[in-house]
Image (tube, rainbow, N blue to C red; front, side, top):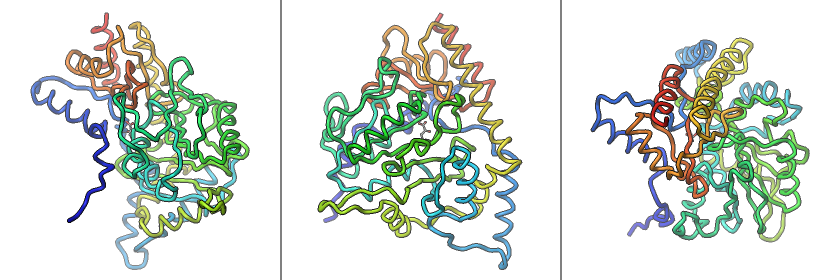
Length: 410
Ligand code: MLT
C-alpha cells in the first residue's frame, strides 16, 4: 500500500494565489461584463525588451545546427551567465563572489523550497508574519512542523511578527533559532531593511550559529541608494547567509524562468557530532543530482539583461512599474487609506478601511470595483486587516483601478 506524505494534509487552505484565481474565476463567470483589473499576484505584464528577445532568439538559432547545438549544460549554470552576474550585479556593490558560489536555477520559489533538502529537520526555523507563503508551506510539507493552531500558526515554527508598530521589520526571535528567512525588499509589505538592520541580523546569526535565507527577489526595485541590495554588503554575511535572487520580476522572466542562489564557500553548518560542513558542497551535490540546469537560450537571455543595451531597457520597465506603485500609493493615500511599501518595492501594503477583514476587503474590491488584490491574512495571521496591491500592471489599468477604488471609498 502506498502511503502519502501526511505532512501535506496539515496545510490549511490551497496555495494563496490559486485560491484567489478560483474566486476571481467564479466572479467573472457570474459577471461576464465586468472589466476586472488584476493587481493580485505579482506577475509581470510588460513584454521582454528587445535586447533580451534578440539574445533569446540567437541562442535558439544556435540550437539549429550541429556545430552550435547545446545538450545538457552544467547543472550549476553556464559560466558566461554566472560571471556576468558577478561582474555586473555584485561587484558594483563591492561584493566579490567566486563562480563556484553562484548557482543558476529555474526560480527562487523552487530554490527557497529545495534548500531545505540540505538542512536537518531538527533545525528551528524562524519566518516573518506576514510572509511569502512558500517559506511556511514548504517547512510544513517537509515535516518540520506539527499542526496549525486556530490562528494559523504551525507548531514548531517561530513566527516573527512584522507589524505597523515595528515598521514591518521583525524583532530578533525570543528563543534560539537555527534558520531565519528574511525577505527584503519584502513581499508582501514592501518594507526594506537598512544597512544597520541587516547588520543586526548578520551579527545575530553569527553569534547564534544560525543561517539566514535572504530572499532578494525584489532588490532591483530599490530606489533609496542607502538600502543594501545584497546581504553580502554586510561584513560577515558570507559566513552566515544564503542569498536568493531572481530574473522573474527584475527582467520579466516569470514565464521564462531563471534565478540564482548564492551559497558562499565560507558558509558552514554542522553535523550532529559538531563537524562543520560546507553548505556549498551539499547544495552542489543536491543540484547535480536533482536538477539538470536551465536551458541555454534562457541563460543567454538572462545574460543579456546586463548587456549595455539590455540593462537600460530592463531598467525602463522597472521604472514603469515603480511609477505604477507611486500612482497606487498616492491615489490610495488621497482616498484616506493608510499605505506602506511601494517606494523600494513593487508592492503596496494597505490597511483595510473601517477595520474590515482582509477577505472582506478582497470581496468588496472585487465586487464593487472589479479590482483584484491579495488579502493580507493570506500571508499570515499578522497580515489580517491589511491588503496587498501589486504594481505589475499596465498603466491605464492602474489609473483606472485607483480611480475606481477612490470613487468607491468616498
Ligand atoms: C507574489 O505575488 O507574491 C509572487 O508573484 C509570488 C511568487 O513570486 O512566487
